[in-house]
Length: 412
Image 1 (cartoon, rainbow, N blue to C red):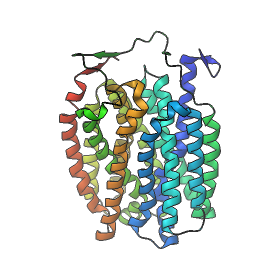
Image 2 (image 1 turned 30 degrees about the horizontal axis):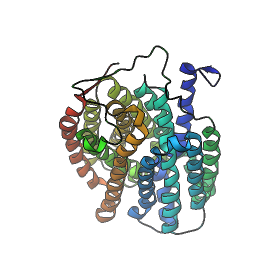
Image 3 (image 1 turned 30 degrees about the vertical axis):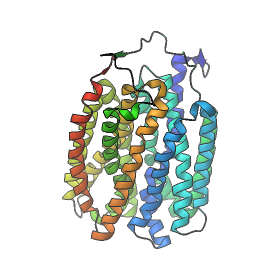
Image 4 (image 1 turned 180 degrees about the vertical axis):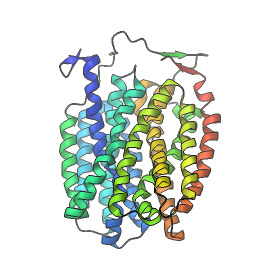
């Protein structure tokens, strides 16, 4: 079998940069902190309100992603990617029109969020099927596009906002993303049902006659709830950090807007590296170890930020690099764990259910961060709950993920 004119075992690697490019477009949501200050000034809104479109987008993303997983086989990867890309682009374009916070929340939060949710799972499902033998590294390399996006889109958005204004920036990005995603959609396809890499011997061994969990039984397992809770905690601190990084740098550390935007690009690198590192760590050792390491880093970062003040640039850079690194890790830990623990054949459906934790973490983290800023006048207090949740996450990983993986072993 051939793919892109090459033997499938070689051609499949070209799907990874294509999928990563799609996710890079979707991952512009992680540059939202660049938009917040201009929108607060333009619309005369507060910190909680400027986080609202971002929060709603993440919620729609989390709701639509699992639903899409049930329709990939029915409508095909190309059709779903194209439809989602058009909807996301339309959301950005409409966000460029004159309107108040409510309109922006609907156009960016709801419409663009629906598009992101429809598209996001497709590249991951395609890669998961083409790489049953290298699931951790392949998925990690693909989702790196989503995490690395601010490295490109944060300075791009800052430049466009400075040159054309925030509304025109939405329009430019919307048109560009639609064109890119539609072009790549024509190239995404899954392998035949019976395809597997030449010479590959499936590494799943089942002990105690325990079958791999399917999408029909996943909700009956303690493993699902352990993974779901850990994923929620991981995204709670990570998505909040993404939403507040630029304004926090300006308000607490006293960086100017341009320097703050540059730090967002730096943090994007750590977000991307986290996906690679934790994809490898989870696949090579265990999901439990991946989760413990991730939460330990969040704990360290939170304690650092509790003491951070004006001029503490090094503290801010290190702490937020750890937040982004850990959060990026969960975008590899969760899908890789889903592939390891549950039936790979039902990956799109299973990970869709697990991914609802992303929405829960997004809602809790971003809203709490904004509310704390409005009530106390500073984001510093937010790092007390992230400290406590990091400790809780370690406990959950030790006790709830441990037994889950005793019945399924994966040969490397």
